[in-house]
Structures are given as structure tokens and as C-alpha cells.
Image 1 (tube, protein in one colour):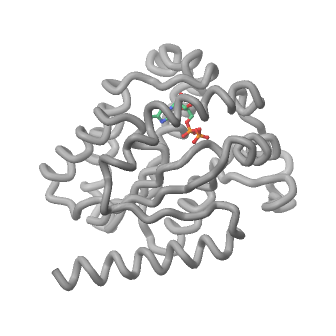
Image 2 (spheres, rainbow, N blue to C red):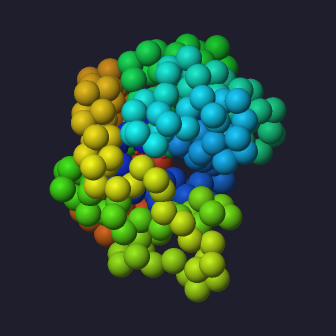
Length: 219
Ligand code: ADP
């Protein structure tokens, strides 16, 4: 099974591109943010435990995240039609990355490839301020650059952690905890300049997956 890791700050387009690629390739999209928000919405014990952490823009503990990922991977490998997974927002710390390495090894998956979505703080704030989410399926839109379809209008919502102060805080958390993973994944990372259009980025990702598959088959 192929594993793609999408690494990058809030608003860099990870969710939008994951949505596109999963539809195109039949991969599964695993967004730890979406999984956690689902727990919060259902008011489960876990949801109540993580709600304020998420709303403040801090990181949920590694133990919780790793156990969610283990459970999700167990469910996915049981599906015969699962050929690939896109991790969007995971791993976010070195301990999470090490836990994923162990899981990859124990499930005998192909080594993950990493896509780094490069975006400045200013652009992150700008993009997040226009972000709209379809509550039915978590599809992500932007009011100007990627407007939602008419039928989604009654279901659109914004996230409580998407206000500028919290985006700035999340960007700092990202720089301290997640950006160092670029060294951890040195040699396995492709960097995307996220200022390019959504369509250009779609194409770059398709090319990247093609070359990933070629190198897997050639060696
Ligand atoms: P973003 O828009 O910043 O990429 P996400 O939807 O991926 O946001 O995540 C929202 C929030 O969920 C994060 O700010 C954090 O509180 C929590 N979260 C998501 N994934 C992780 C993770 N891998 N480790 C710790 N916390 C996480």
C-alpha cells in the first residue's frame, strides 16, 4: 500500500488537494483534524477531552493521535479496495513520525512519500479567513479562489480556530513541532510552492504519484 504524507501549515491546500487526489486515485483520505472534529461534534469522551485544545490551536497529545491512526489503519487494511492512503495533518511531531514508521514496517507498507506544502504566515492568514467547509462531507472551499457549488450553500460553516490570532498561533506551533519533520523525511520530500493555482498543483501531484509508482516498480 502507498502512503502519502501531506505536510504544511493551515491553509496551504492539503485538504483540497487530498480531496482531489483521493477521488482521482481511489486512495483514502485520513485527516486527523476531521477525525478529531467528528469526535467533538458527537460529544464523545475523547471529543470533550480535545475540544478546547483544538479550539486554542494547540496539538492534541501524541498518544491520542497515534491510537486514532492505529485504529484507522486497521480498518483500512481490512478493505480489499484500499491501495493507498493520504495522511493530511499527520504526523505533526517527531514521535508521531516514529510511530508511523513502526506501523509502516509492521503492516509491510511501502515507505511513505512526503509532499511539503510551502506557505508563508501572511498567506496562511489570508487563505484561512476565506475558508468555508461543507458540513456534509468536510469538503473545503475558499470564498474567492475556490467558491463552493450552489447546492453546498445551506451547509457551509467556518471553524472556530480559523480566526487570525489562532491561525498565527497554529503557524507558530507548526513551525516548532512539525517543520522539523522535513529533516526527518530528508530525501523523501517533494516541495510544492502553494501560490500556484489549484489546477497546477493537481497536475504536479499526479506527476509526483506517477514517478513514485515508477520508482516502486523499478526497485
Ligand atoms: P489545519 O487547518 O491547521 O491543517 P487540521 O484540521 O489538520 O488543521 O487540525 C485541526 C486541529 O486538530 C489542530 O490545530 C490540532 O489541535 C488538532 N490536530 C490535528 N491533527 C493533529 C496531529 N497529528 N497531532 C496533534 N494535533 C492534531
